[in-house]
Image (cartoon, rainbow, N blue to C red; front, top):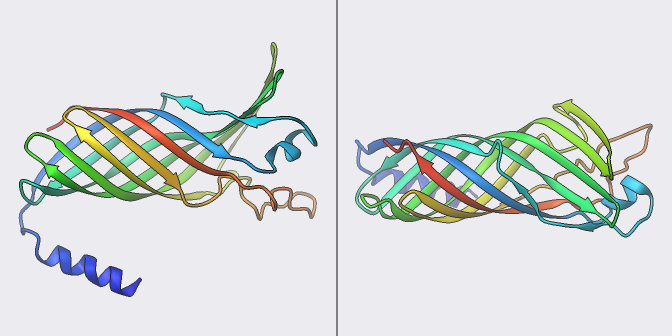
Length: 211
């Protein structure tokens, strides 16, 4: 880890002192999937529930500051709001757990900065703000919501890689922690101890107000 930090610091030492700075607003369509081993047992005891992809549009938005250190290399960081979670269902019932997160990304860009054609790779730290849990069975809907819930991990680090072509981009993101909090306690029991809930997502996004 120390060698990696030293390498990054040495790379910064060779960057131009005055990078070209711009900002970009982004909106995203997000398709996510979770491997939620053991979650069905917590929700319903036993059942034939299966994970299915979850598609969201709102409120997946991001505002970034871009630093271009030349024609072919740059960085960006900013602030984003994301709808993250998982979906379980069988023939009759659907269970959704979702969190609204605020995140701070940091990424490198390599490609043609002038034409806005580049690949990017980076990491992000997200903080969960609001958790919503809901079950849907026919016309019956049950919802529970709570701010800064300890049922899920409050901090959610991730790594991502993607490609940008002018106004559009595609991205793959992998969360490094489980979505649910394995150490959560309820009446001296830890119901999520054996639950795995890793999430990864594929994003199709649009850049606007690029200045």
